[in-house]
Amino acid sequence: MPSKPFTRALTIAGSDSGGGAGIQADLKTFAALGAYGTSVITAVTAQNTQGVQAVHPVPADIVAAQCQSVFSDIRIDAVKIGMLPDTATIHAVAAALRKYNNAFVVLDPVLAATSGEKLAQEDTIEALCNELLPLADLVTPNINELAALTGNNTAENEDEMLEQGRQLMEKGAVAVLLKGGHWEHSKEARDWLLVADHQPQCFRNGR
Image 1: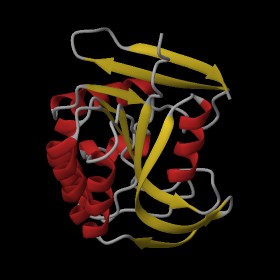
Image 2: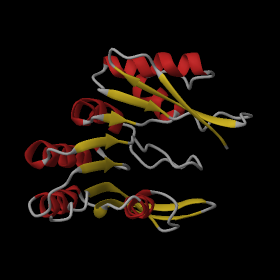
Image 3: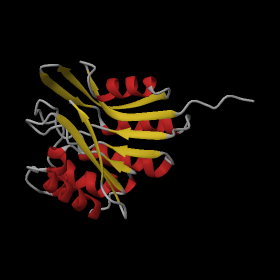
Image 4: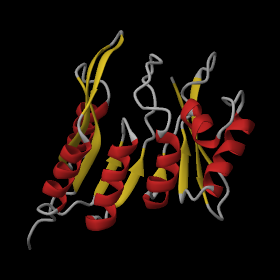
Protein backbone atom coordinates (compact mmCIF):
# COMPACT_ATOMS: atom_id res chain seq x y z
CA MET A 1 0.00 0.00 0.00
CA PRO A 2 1.53 3.37 -1.00
CA SER A 3 2.53 5.68 1.83
CA LYS A 4 0.54 8.85 2.43
CA PRO A 5 2.19 11.85 0.72
CA PHE A 6 3.73 14.59 2.81
CA THR A 7 1.49 17.47 3.76
CA ARG A 8 2.72 20.47 1.78
CA ALA A 9 2.62 23.88 3.42
CA LEU A 10 3.44 27.35 2.12
CA THR A 11 4.58 30.28 4.26
CA ILE A 12 4.17 33.76 2.79
CA ALA A 13 6.12 36.02 5.11
CA GLY A 14 9.21 38.09 5.80
CA SER A 15 12.69 36.73 6.40
CA ASP A 16 13.94 37.04 9.99
CA SER A 17 17.74 36.93 10.04
CA GLY A 18 17.65 35.97 13.72
CA GLY A 19 15.56 32.88 12.96
CA GLY A 20 12.96 33.48 15.66
CA ALA A 21 10.03 34.52 13.48
CA GLY A 22 8.91 34.82 9.87
CA ILE A 23 9.93 32.42 7.13
CA GLN A 24 12.60 30.74 9.23
CA ALA A 25 10.33 29.99 12.19
CA ASP A 26 7.51 28.79 9.93
CA LEU A 27 9.74 26.37 8.00
CA LYS A 28 11.14 24.97 11.27
CA THR A 29 7.58 24.43 12.51
CA PHE A 30 6.49 22.77 9.26
CA ALA A 31 9.46 20.38 9.44
CA ALA A 32 8.85 19.58 13.11
CA LEU A 33 5.27 18.62 12.26
CA GLY A 34 6.31 16.44 9.34
CA ALA A 35 5.24 18.78 6.54
CA TYR A 36 7.13 19.75 3.40
CA GLY A 37 7.67 23.49 3.56
CA THR A 38 7.70 25.98 0.71
CA SER A 39 8.05 29.75 0.93
CA VAL A 40 7.30 33.13 -0.61
CA ILE A 41 9.46 35.89 0.87
CA THR A 42 7.74 39.28 1.16
CA ALA A 43 10.49 41.25 2.89
CA VAL A 44 14.05 40.92 4.15
CA THR A 45 14.70 42.13 7.67
CA ALA A 46 17.85 42.70 9.67
CA GLN A 47 16.62 41.30 12.96
CA ASN A 48 17.95 39.63 16.09
CA THR A 49 16.85 39.01 19.68
CA GLN A 50 17.29 42.73 20.45
CA GLY A 51 14.91 44.05 17.79
CA VAL A 52 14.55 44.96 14.11
CA GLN A 53 17.37 47.02 12.64
CA ALA A 54 16.17 47.30 9.02
CA VAL A 55 13.33 46.22 6.72
CA HIS A 56 13.54 45.88 2.92
CA PRO A 57 10.25 44.93 1.18
CA VAL A 58 10.48 42.57 -1.78
CA PRO A 59 8.82 44.13 -4.89
CA ALA A 60 5.23 42.96 -5.33
CA ASP A 61 5.88 41.55 -8.81
CA ILE A 62 8.58 39.28 -7.37
CA VAL A 63 6.17 38.18 -4.63
CA ALA A 64 3.60 37.38 -7.32
CA ALA A 65 6.20 35.44 -9.32
CA GLN A 66 7.14 33.37 -6.27
CA CYS A 67 3.46 32.55 -5.65
CA GLN A 68 2.99 31.49 -9.26
CA SER A 69 6.09 29.29 -9.17
CA VAL A 70 4.93 27.44 -6.07
CA PHE A 71 1.20 27.13 -6.77
CA SER A 72 1.61 26.15 -10.43
CA ASP A 73 3.92 23.25 -9.61
CA ILE A 74 3.31 22.00 -6.06
CA ARG A 75 0.04 20.87 -4.47
CA ILE A 76 -0.29 23.11 -1.41
CA ASP A 77 -2.46 21.85 1.46
CA ALA A 78 -2.08 24.80 3.84
CA VAL A 79 -0.96 28.43 3.55
CA LYS A 80 0.27 30.55 6.44
CA ILE A 81 0.44 34.28 5.70
CA GLY A 82 2.58 36.53 7.87
CA MET A 83 4.27 39.86 7.18
CA LEU A 84 2.89 41.76 4.18
CA PRO A 85 4.68 45.13 4.12
CA ASP A 86 2.44 47.13 1.73
CA THR A 87 -0.84 47.13 -0.17
CA ALA A 88 0.78 46.08 -3.47
CA THR A 89 2.03 42.90 -1.80
CA ILE A 90 -1.39 42.26 -0.28
CA HIS A 91 -3.04 42.58 -3.69
CA ALA A 92 -0.46 40.23 -5.23
CA VAL A 93 -0.98 37.55 -2.57
CA ALA A 94 -4.77 37.85 -2.71
CA ALA A 95 -4.73 37.52 -6.51
CA ALA A 96 -2.58 34.39 -6.28
CA LEU A 97 -4.87 32.80 -3.68
CA ARG A 98 -7.94 33.51 -5.80
CA LYS A 99 -6.28 32.10 -8.93
CA TYR A 100 -4.53 29.00 -7.65
CA ASN A 101 -5.35 28.09 -4.10
CA ASN A 102 -7.69 25.49 -2.61
CA ALA A 103 -5.71 25.14 0.62
CA PHE A 104 -6.55 25.98 4.23
CA VAL A 105 -5.42 29.58 4.76
CA VAL A 106 -4.16 30.97 8.07
CA LEU A 107 -3.74 34.76 8.18
CA ASP A 108 -1.38 36.06 10.87
CA PRO A 109 -1.70 39.86 10.48
CA VAL A 110 1.91 40.83 11.31
CA LEU A 111 1.88 44.61 11.63
CA ALA A 112 4.77 45.07 14.05
CA ALA A 113 7.57 43.06 15.63
CA THR A 114 7.43 42.11 19.29
CA SER A 115 9.95 44.88 19.92
CA GLY A 116 7.40 47.41 18.59
CA GLU A 117 9.16 48.09 15.26
CA LYS A 118 6.57 48.69 12.52
CA LEU A 119 6.77 46.12 9.74
CA ALA A 120 3.87 47.32 7.58
CA GLN A 121 2.57 50.61 6.22
CA GLU A 122 -0.49 52.27 7.76
CA ASP A 123 -2.73 51.68 4.72
CA THR A 124 -2.25 47.92 4.86
CA ILE A 125 -5.00 47.42 7.44
CA GLU A 126 -7.88 48.29 5.10
CA ALA A 127 -6.37 46.16 2.34
CA LEU A 128 -5.93 43.22 4.72
CA CYS A 129 -9.57 43.40 5.77
CA ASN A 130 -10.91 43.84 2.24
CA GLU A 131 -8.61 41.52 0.29
CA LEU A 132 -7.39 38.74 2.56
CA LEU A 133 -9.89 38.42 5.40
CA PRO A 134 -12.53 36.89 3.07
CA LEU A 135 -9.97 34.36 1.79
CA ALA A 136 -8.73 33.19 5.21
CA ASP A 137 -10.05 30.18 7.11
CA LEU A 138 -8.43 31.36 10.35
CA VAL A 139 -7.11 34.75 11.50
CA THR A 140 -4.62 34.82 14.40
CA PRO A 141 -4.12 38.37 15.77
CA ASN A 142 -2.47 39.31 19.04
CA ILE A 143 -4.16 42.03 21.11
CA ASN A 144 -2.34 44.90 19.38
CA GLU A 145 -3.08 43.59 15.89
CA LEU A 146 -6.69 42.94 16.88
CA ALA A 147 -7.11 46.55 17.98
CA ALA A 148 -5.63 47.82 14.72
CA LEU A 149 -7.84 45.59 12.57
CA THR A 150 -11.02 46.63 14.40
CA GLY A 151 -10.18 50.32 14.91
CA ASN A 152 -10.17 50.11 18.70
CA ASN A 153 -7.80 50.89 21.52
CA THR A 154 -5.79 47.90 22.72
CA ALA A 155 -7.97 45.65 24.88
CA GLU A 156 -7.26 45.96 28.59
CA ASN A 157 -8.90 42.68 29.59
CA GLU A 158 -10.23 39.47 28.08
CA ASP A 159 -13.81 40.73 27.84
CA GLU A 160 -12.67 43.61 25.63
CA MET A 161 -10.47 41.24 23.60
CA LEU A 162 -13.41 38.89 23.00
CA GLU A 163 -15.65 41.79 21.95
CA GLN A 164 -13.05 42.95 19.45
CA GLY A 165 -12.77 39.37 18.21
CA ARG A 166 -16.51 39.35 17.57
CA GLN A 167 -16.14 42.62 15.66
CA LEU A 168 -13.52 40.97 13.46
CA MET A 169 -15.96 38.11 12.82
CA GLU A 170 -18.52 40.71 11.72
CA LYS A 171 -15.97 41.98 9.19
CA GLY A 172 -16.03 38.56 7.54
CA ALA A 173 -13.55 36.36 9.42
CA VAL A 174 -14.56 32.68 9.39
CA ALA A 175 -12.69 31.91 12.61
CA VAL A 176 -10.42 33.96 14.88
CA LEU A 177 -7.75 32.73 17.29
CA LEU A 178 -7.14 35.56 19.77
CA LYS A 179 -3.58 35.31 21.07
CA GLY A 180 -3.44 36.41 24.69
CA GLY A 181 0.27 35.95 25.29
CA HIS A 182 0.91 39.68 25.47
CA TRP A 183 -0.94 40.27 28.75
CA GLU A 184 1.45 41.70 31.30
CA HIS A 185 1.70 40.32 34.84
CA SER A 186 -0.02 37.06 33.84
CA LYS A 187 1.40 33.67 34.82
CA GLU A 188 -0.33 31.89 31.96
CA ALA A 189 -0.99 32.45 28.27
CA ARG A 190 -4.67 32.26 27.36
CA ASP A 191 -5.81 32.08 23.75
CA TRP A 192 -9.44 32.17 22.63
CA LEU A 193 -10.91 30.56 19.52
CA LEU A 194 -14.03 32.17 18.02
CA VAL A 195 -16.02 30.28 15.40
CA ALA A 196 -19.45 31.28 14.11
CA ASP A 197 -22.34 29.55 15.90
CA HIS A 198 -20.03 28.08 18.57
CA GLN A 199 -19.18 29.12 22.10
CA PRO A 200 -15.71 30.70 22.50
CA GLN A 201 -13.09 28.10 23.42
CA CYS A 202 -10.16 28.90 25.69
CA PHE A 203 -6.68 27.35 25.45
CA ARG A 204 -4.39 28.03 28.40
CA ASN A 205 -0.90 27.12 29.46
CA GLY A 206 1.82 28.37 31.76
CA ARG A 207 4.36 30.79 30.40
